[in-house]
Image (cartoon, rainbow, N blue to C red; front, side):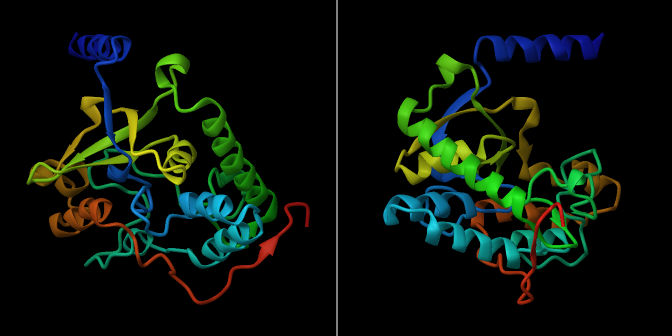
Length: 249
């Protein structure tokens, strides 16, 4: 009965837009700790800023390629550019109950996103071209139509992170290309879908599932949480340059 009531409440919140917030683009952050709208390096936003500034894709593509060939983290701390006491698997968020799928994979079919999943063989050229197309398509769509969540009913989904001092960051669960486009165009606010049942409170760290299970020390859990407020300046995780390969090769 309680589960049915929870589902009903969630549907009600969504139907009437009660789970939507209009927030600063600068409060939004990618899984890898890359913050939007702050003039910091962000693989998506920087790509689009470079393209808009230079009027072509050459330099922008080379810079993103260089990032992907050197952003090859083996643990959650290096993925976020922070030092943890323990070796935490990439994307095993301390507030999540579920275990994540492996971030390092052998097969291209198991690599849904080349920014969050990594192939031992290197960077797949076809996926790289696909990424260029997604970014450029998102930018063109936003330039032509704007961001109209009310009209198209496709607001970006985010998890709200709430610090002990009340500050908030919004971890984007989808829509990163759209928000990168808004940031590159200088838009300062964005409407997000932020279901309250997804919110994470720093002052409840002791109750987070991975902390309760003893899989993530509370100090490391806080480090992961706070990385999303501080940004990621340590994203070059290896000096070895990953190869580029053709999927058919």
